[in-house]
Length: 308
Image 1 (cartoon, rainbow, N blue to C red):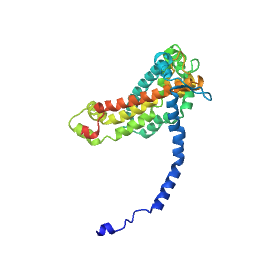
Image 2: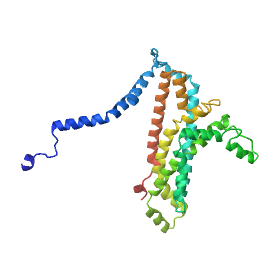
Image 3: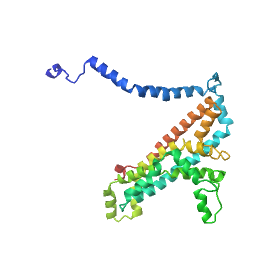
Image 4: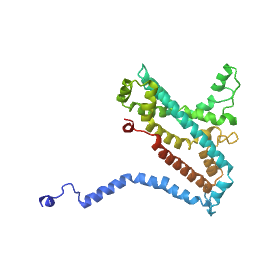
């Protein structure tokens, strides 16, 4: 009875609680307005534009499922751009994970200057994407570029890196791998989170270096690899800057990335309804692939408690 009669000293008066909530919502109102105007609003509008033909500042015409039908039956540029983005995403994510793992294993060793080399390898990832694109464009130049100058030293023929169908997309893959430093940092953090006790116990049992990597390091590093696979795939499927600045989809649509094609449809052809179909389809593709990765992760991603 005494506990029930004791007043709750932490209970805030109703007027004061209302005033505190009001000020709280007032402080976050810029974010709420930004979310409604620049994210939620455009999402709803683009969803409605799927069923229309709209060129901007003109009358909106309802066309039903015509845009979806055109996408499925007639649009060869759509299938080509989807293939280009898929190939680009597969190779960039796969090679980036392998290269960053090798770099992290080397830089995880204690040697003189290892901190310096960690910073050097990460530095390209900190450079602006636009600036780095111009640097790579100069290195890929056919007559005076650095790569062709090196080939000339060894008496190899010059390569049209960005001007031939065979080498345009591989050139973009090479360009993207140059910024693998952020992958390396995350991979290095995953390596350093593995308890040394497990390695020491395995060494006492006579495990070799390869056995340590296969049965301890790699399983405990699988959550980090899984994270990099997810974010890498999402980012690679949305590549745009390099393709827009250098080749604009050429030659012969060999670098027509999906988002670049979406941009062309929306802002060059001014078909916002059809572009909305492409945008929402990209969202569904990324969401589906992400969910698939989470489902498959149950079979190969291991954690410390499971290994121990």
